[in-house]
Image (tube, helix red, strand yellow):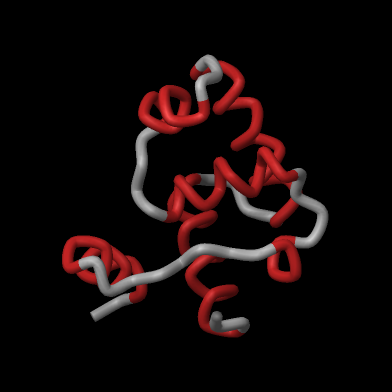
Length: 91
């Protein structure tokens, strides 16, 4: 089973905990970290916007900044990066 399938299975069963702290995410702002943690939980952009009470366009801007800061190009790459960081630096 590859990393993404493991992540999805753990999310469905509630077994995965991919919350990241500042020590793992370098120079992400507090808001970017909030967005990233929701992304890792599989929440859609629209759901993130509602949860954080900001517009969806702002979420997209945060995600673009996050991707740039962690060196990835897509949502799936960001999720895999986050999973790897959670394994390297477990809670």
